[in-house]
View 1: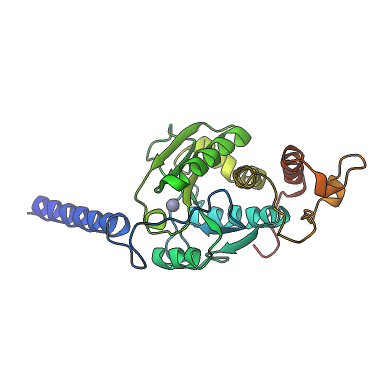
View 2: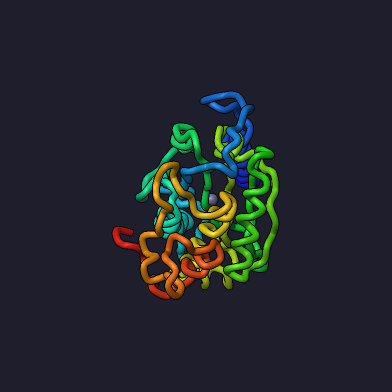
Length: 270
Ligand SMILES: [Zn+2]
């Protein structure tokens, strides 16, 4: 009898889980049909940053209790000022520990007409041996961007590049803007979790994402009719007598990396 009940509970849990997955991945998009992604993957001026999970939804959890929702927010908070310094507008789907439904995240993205959407996550592979970076996209318009992001993550952190794949995640499939979801490491890997616990490693992740985004756009942007955008923290980043506005992409990338040493703690307000 106990055995039968146990089997019933397992069966019920399985159907509940399957139902949840179906809802998240395959139900139709609330706001629009799955067509007509905006062609902004190389012309965008705004980046919508989506820190995965939040509130009662903690996401993955390491054995020592590091929560995915906390480090996604930390990485996004480190990433946003780097992008603003390169001339981009940033919009955060959440800036504190709150739960935001997936459709709401998509709505926030769609209000921006010259944007790309980046959702930041960390993974749980069940096995300790699995580690590394991955990225996911749905539209063809987002494919190259996804490859670039995972490549930069692997290059700068030294983690393995597990590639980019097409996926039907709701925040990707229902998004009118080019959209990528990055998995920046595995909380089930003891080795990777040790790194993720260190602010300097999360800073590296933010730097990698910033570099890839700036590169995807072809360099820091200059709004029409305005002076070239000078990165706010670039005064000390000038090379020789060259003003910061003439910094090449490579120099900007180097400068962004230099900031890592100055930031060992959570940014103010984190
Ligand atoms: Zn996640």
